[in-house]
Amino acid sequence: MTTPLLEVRNLRKRYGGVDAVADVSFDLAAGEMLALIGPNGAGKTTCFNMLSGQLRPDAGSVRLAGRELSGLPPRAIWRLGVGRTFQIAETFGSMTALENVQMALLSREQRLFSLWRRAAAQFSDEAAQLLDAVGMAAQRDRPCAVLAYGDVKRVELAIALANRPRLLLMDEPTAGMGMGERHALMALVRDLARERQLGVLFTEHSMDVVFGYAGRILVLARGRLIAQGDPESVRKDAQVREVYFGSSAGQPA
Ligand SMILES: Nc1ncnc2c1ncn2[C@@H]1O[C@H](COP(=O)(O)OP(=O)(O)OP(=O)(O)O)[C@@H](O)[C@H]1O
Image (cartoon, rainbow, N blue to C red; front, side):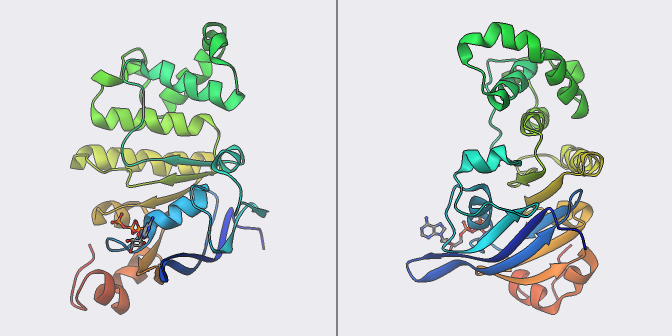
């Protein structure tokens, strides 16, 4: 059997005697879209923060292509190929879309900012290719401050791809978006995951996004995984309906 891209085993984080995340184990394959869902306070953010190194687990293991990440600082984990996009898009508004992606490429190559002019010329082709991959080629020279919110999220995706991640963690990628934009972004992420064999783990409150785009779904409640599987089996799971959706008769999507 081939090693999964990501192997999480018995991950745990306690706060004041309460398990924020308890004994969480799952695998994620290259090219897979995996959703991590659960009610408020279930432990999704805590889980993400442990995967990206912002938070040190109390116990457990996180392996990327067989390599242990647990205990490494965030920068080292990022260098090994774990990218992350946040709920609030993080771009420099005064800089163009192209310049924002060039900055990310500079960071990957660890160039000094004093070399910005020369380096900027050097990375412009690669930055343009990344913007093309996220459907932003036509808007590359516009400052991010004037872009529509959904387009800023696309630039943010190009920035995350600049480091050539193998695993992308996405915190509520469609938060604040309208229905059309939301589906366009998730269809793009799904295509990129498939084409680049990128593993994507995302949290999301919007059930139409979760059930529309996740190949598999993990359900957390009070820090524990209560279900994992394909959308159909999770939709039918009685415990998921009971604990997460509030009633055994509830319709998750
Ligand atoms: N720094 C902290 N100190 C104490 N308790 C914390 C801390 N961070 C999280 N918690 C607790 O851990 C639990 C899990 O929180 P977490 O933010 O991971 O949940 P979540 O699923 O991301 O929730 P939401 O959907 O509301 O963002 C909650 O009970 C929360 O109160």
